[in-house]
Length: 209
Image 1 (cartoon, rainbow, N blue to C red):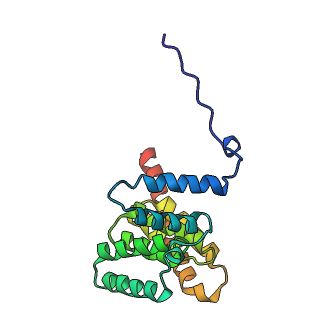
Image 2 (tube, rainbow, N blue to C red):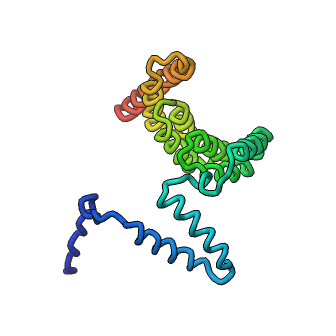
Image 3 (cartoon, rainbow, N blue to C red):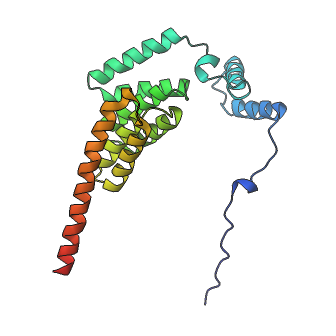
């Protein structure tokens, strides 16, 4: 009889190192990372990359601010991406919104826009990831949750779709600006619940027969 292996202990947050990284250690990690860029990257380029990484990881700047990209330039990129999306070029728009989100990782609008592009391309897994990111970045808006509902509905996942609708309604609350979304979600949830109940009843009848 084969010897059973000992189950591995689950790693929790308590097992993680408590020591905070020092500025000196961070600079060391950045130097190691930059040196791995290889001989095709000049010393000057490596220095510039290192400066950017210090601004982002030590000073907490967004990549956009670290690279000194203006709001006007971001607005131009957004406008171009939106024109691509409006023309039905969803793959092109997706790549542009990816760049925008990488420049401003905490921008809920960019996360939502990227999610919509994936949604249009039926990349539901990635769309849901972006929608959940947008939901956490903007804790008041129900929009991403509603889009997430549609992703699950498109995959015939009624249970998850119902959960999303419940969350949409809860987040809308009594806010007048979300009246339309809340009413739409309530109608869809009622229809979904009816369909689920009817499906369960049919299953029971078939089993009894």
